[in-house]
Image (cartoon, rainbow, N blue to C red; front, side):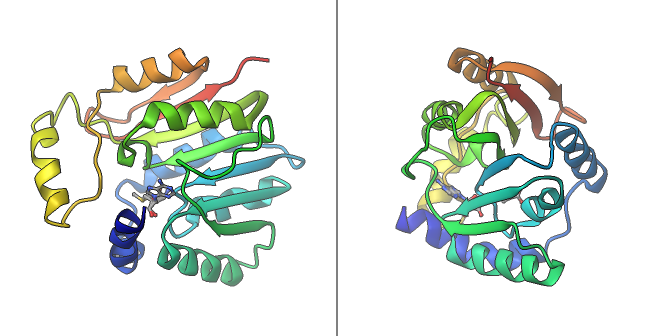
Amino acid sequence: MAELSAFWDRLADKYAAQPIADEDAYRTKLARTQEHLTPEMEIFEFGCGTGGTAIAHAPHVRSVRAIDFSTRMLDMARQRAAEAGVDNVTFEQGDITSIAVEPGRYDMVLGLSILHLLKDRQAVIARVYEMLKPGGRFVSSTACLGDSMKWFGYVAPLGRALGLLPMLNVMTPDQLRADMIRTGFVIEHDWRPNPKSALFLIARKPD
Ligand SMILES: C[S@@+](CC[C@H](N)C(=O)[O-])C[C@H]1O[C@@H](n2cnc3c(N)ncnc32)[C@H](O)[C@@H]1O
C-alpha cells in the first residue's frame, strides 16, 4: 500500500489542478446519482481523491464517509470541504482492499475512477456488495481500456516499474458488467458518453 499511496501523494497537487476532462458528463453523472439520494441516507466513497464528488453530494444526504489512501489528497479534500462550508463529510485515510467492512451499513457506495486501479477489482466489488443495505446502490465510473486501447495492458507494467503510472488494470466494459452481475448486482443504469469515455454504472443490490 505504501508504494501505491506514495504515487498518489506525489500526483495530488497536479491532479487537483487539472480541469475535469468532460464537465458535461461529470455533471450528468452527479445528477443521475442524486436522483437516488434522500436526506436520511448514509453514503460511502472510496478513492475520493480531493473530495469534489463527496462535497457535491453532501447537501443531499445525512452523511458521507469518504476514504482515500493518499494523505495529500485528503488534506486537499478537507480544505475544500471547509471552504464549501460542508460539515457532514468525513475524510479518512484507508485502503478499500483492507478497510474494515461493516456489513449492510450504507445506502450507497461510490467508486469513481478507481476500479481500474485495483489489482483485484472483483474482491472490492464483493466488499462493496457486503457494505450495502439490501436495495442499496453502487455508483462507479471506470476507465475500460480493454477494447479501444488493449495494447496499454502491455505497456502499463513497465510504466508502473518506472514510477510513471499507478497500478492499472485493463478491462473491457463487458468484463466489468460481468463482474457486477456475478457479484449479485443488478445494473440499473449503464452509460458511456463515447467509446473512449469511462463506463458509468449504477448497480443495485437486490432487496
Ligand atoms: C484517479 S483518482 C480518482 C479520484 C476521484 N474519485 C475522482 O473521481 O476524481 C484515484 C484515487 O484513488 C485513490 N486510491 C487508489 N487505490 C486506492 C485504494 N486501494 N484504497 C483507497 N484509495 C485508493 C488514489 O489515492 C486517488 O486519490
